[in-house]
Amino acid sequence: MAKKKTSDKLKIISYKKNTFADADKIGEYTVRYNPVNIQHDYDINFDEQQAIGSSGGENKYSYSKPEKLSFELIFDQTIVADGDKEKYSVNDDIKTFKKHIIDFNGSIHRPNYVRLAWGDFTFKGQIASLAFNYTAFSWIGKPLKARATVSFLEVVDVKARLASENKSSPDLSHIITIKEGDRLPMICNEIYGDPTLYIEVARMNKLDSFRKLKAGEQIILPPLEK
Image (cartoon, rainbow, N blue to C red; front, side):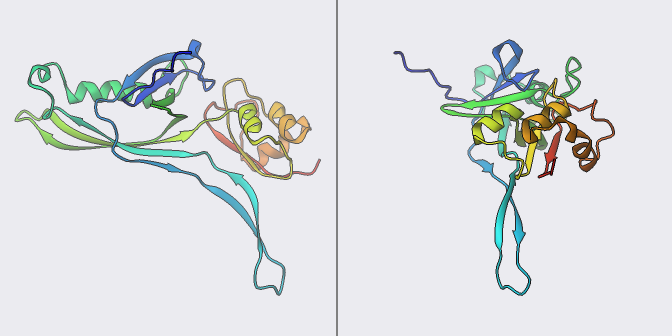
């Protein structure tokens, strides 16, 4: 069996749905310079329980927030090979980069979903924040060097998250990311085994209407009694 080819540069592949299926692929962007450092954050929430008069308590697992990936990218025209300097533009490169990760996509009414792939590493998510720091300009004000600080939040649909955790206990809080086609009664049936609890979940998440869930938004499903 041939060994699967991996990329030597970080690729950011954009999708119109958070299924990340090939049929929903929009395009891809390959960074010119790989990030030097990547920060991968995991945030676990616990409910602290302590008996009256005791000196310690038990931290009971509540839920895990979506993972967060952060790094910096460099856009630099000053170190481009002489033969490519006329072809490469920091402005154009940044425009293409933004188109894939943060620009509003009118066909899906939101920024694209993205999958980051570099070697054996992969991360599926959506843009959380993006900031540019421009550090060099030409004499006419054209950017020659810039540094982008970018972070992504993990995106996992309900069924995939439950499958990876191998549980759907109604005694634990769940934080999920809504995907296109999700309905609150369906989600409540997945978690609690009772679709009628959607009213309580909508109230606790301060949803104006359970019928208008927005793809990409996150809701919390706390422990509820049927």
